[in-house]
Image 1 (spheres, rainbow, N blue to C red):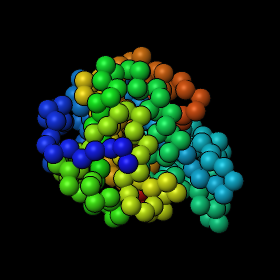
Image 2: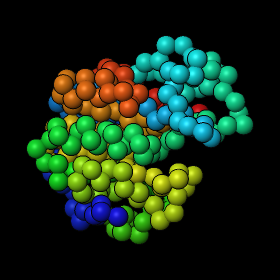
Image 3: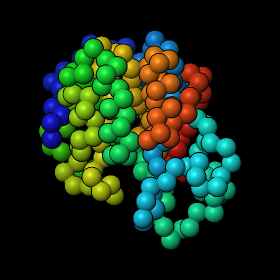
Image 4: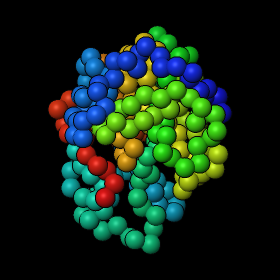
Amino acid sequence: MNLRPCAQRPPILNGLPDGAADEVSVGQLLLPGMMAYARVLNPARRRDADIRWDEIGAPQVDSTTQWPEIAAAGHVDSRDPWEPYSGTVDAAIANRLAQLLVTRTTTPDECFFLVWEGYGGLRPEVRTAATVEVAPHSRRMHILSGRVTDATQSIETAPSGHPLGRSPMWWIPGDGAWCVGNDIYGRSVFVGGTAEAVSAIVADPLLEAYVADADQTLANEVY
């Protein structure tokens, strides 16, 4: 694993909002000062291929759509492992998102990654890292550091239902140019950044991403 445990909290994380709130908006979740936001979805998983939510025959998908709406409207076959991964970023999605974001920071070799302390199977070195609390519910997260392109690294000793193991859901470059994150039950991640960065993410054909509003309430994505 290229990611390294941080011995202390880096100053950039001091800007994270108070984590104690039980209900937060997208703007209250990520670093302040972001100009625009997107929600990037983990794909649904079939035995033979991944599939976008908007290809399942469901109603119009947007940044507020939740998986149960898709499953109900798309007549999802329960014999297939359809559900998108939760608590991680799908490996292909993380790889493409990192490619888009690495050129949009002045510190591509200094990025901080947050990992929830409650996940089973965490690598021993992850558990030695300093922590920070994030919203909602004051989730305590271990802090790792590495390059932006290390975002796809597994933080588990053994996969927990994820073929390549969980990867961090939170990414914050040292210059704070953008911020990626979601609650531990997310089937997606939110990205805050410049209008140009968000536009590039939403327009990318390899991602299923939608413009989100700063006032959009964060939903519990696992039911």
